[in-house]
Image (cartoon, rainbow, N blue to C red; front, side, top):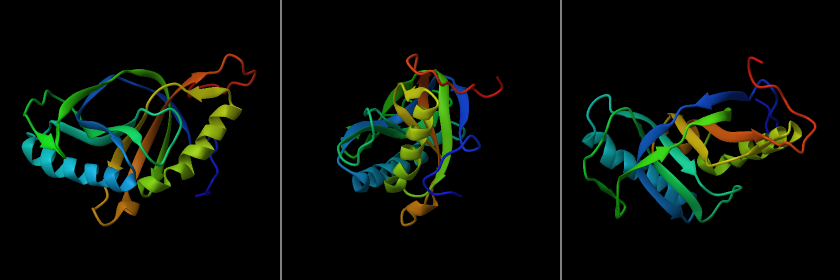
Length: 178
């Protein structure tokens, strides 16, 4: 693992179908509140769901750019089937959140706590800019391995960045399998 570097072996470009998640969306003041949201959503939603309904836990960052405070974020579970039980988490009603299909996502997998996500996002932004791409929508984080409440460093997260080719750039990188 090379800290602070991203190369062609680290990034996969893929399309992602439309999806639905159930959860909450708020302006999150910081990572401490974000972690509270993660574990409270797990505590409330998991026991209320039938077997096979819930997919991976997800977070969607609606902000342009990356920030450490006042983050416009939705968190919850991908759902495979309708989920219509009325639930409340941290004073908010759990709702269905529609995620549009994305033609091209730049995808990387990171290990570690959310307050270290910048160790991937900053080099990835540089990598994409060098190849003529820019982020074109909300960034998704799909938790492949959820951490225990006292071990956020154990998280394994697939970070999905919707991207478009920058027509002003003369450098473009071919997408996978081209």
